[in-house]
Image (cartoon, rainbow, N blue to C red; front, top):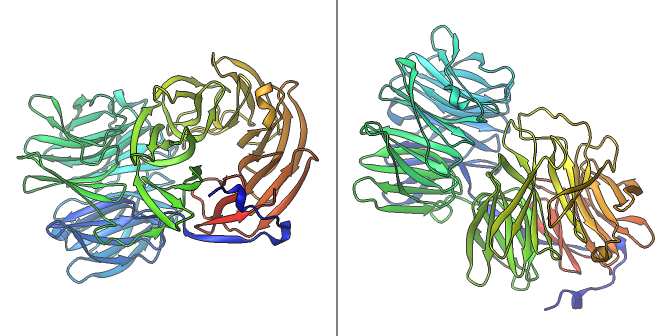
Length: 632
């Protein structure tokens, strides 16, 4: 059924919003703890967060509980043989105590100066648990025997993250980001010492830590290296790296070996401490994050960030994987990442999955993908996704329902910000932000025919990231933001537009469209772009709509719209745009704008987005997918 045939003229004040139901239902997780045969997990990005108990024997969620605060949990650990489970939340940094025998749940502390508990650990037999936090990069001790909280202080005052924690009888080890460090803290005196191997100084994170069997295992991001450090002599260490990986996600030590997982493959590896050799064992959940890794009775147990638990048999190489939503973990409406159209239907990007909404049938179908699709677009009836973390490109083929990871950008790029298909050159362009603690984003050129990245142009505008891409004739026009990866201080003062030859990738020009603006959120061009006479239209993050002539680099129009700027789409001779407060239209013939609809209260994870089939406009109302029919 053609969407155009359904267009019904409406006055702006009569535009009806039809809510189509939850945009994206999910059960992503970011922490896990194994207690006997039960894996305890906590959901991510869902309110209220759900603490779920997954039984390895029955492969079912046997119980689940709501946490009264926070948006999820990155951190959990247990003491007293697993009878006392501790969970640290984010959104607000609360510590919860859960008695696994009685199912009694209580909040025991709030870390007032923090917003995230990033990791937790405890030493067997002790009554103290330790928590690493964001944004003060601090370590806290909670003593169950006294109910008291001790602030050990910031381990790196110029940093924001204690991303990982490991504990021995006398020392707490803290892995730092956004500029990597590894700090040893004396539990008795609180004295701190940096023990980071110098080889890791250019990394963003010591992403994972494990302390056992006389060693400290430290995994990094984005170099994807593993250090095995002697607890008795920090200067004695070995470094290993699995080929082609960026992040060491999780590790465990057993039987003279270090077992660990890495991205972006999602593979599990063994590092033999005697031979110093790395062996790739299996890929239980391809491309997935592993939120924790355990060994129990000759079996590795992993918790996948997409919302699954997998096992790997060390003796027989057998792999199992169970989707936690299918196993009974309640799905909740998550804040969506992105929105695009494919074959007349809206597609919503979520966390490690995406949802195809069949608007005629009123049904939805979910598919797993390789992370968070920050931006999506359709090319020749296939859906391309630009994915965080790792600046990955994936492709969904609706004829086979296959999702394939086709490329990884590299060059220290991490967070895609926009994707645009240029039909004239046959290229897909992706704008990116770099890794944590780094500056200098990139314009990425990708060939859909060969499914390969053909060029990565970093620092198109020096020290800025690429947030928006459109094209005119043989020119890719990019908009920037002054920010780099989280934890990197901006160097530039204002966002720019730049023109890049779409075939040679040579920069042609640069200009400032809105003085003082920090982010160009999105760009579109008028329909005569193929003739090289187009106008470029854009919007800043703080809601300034503008038009420029790319030939003269002069500003033709500039005005404020309602709310925080989001995505723009071209429709005939008008531009539809969305902010966090309203849907608006700009008539390119009359240079007049109008607010079409207010009050969506959209629950986006990223900036507001919209998509259109030529008649209906799809956007968010709260966290529901909504359809608005706009007069042509």
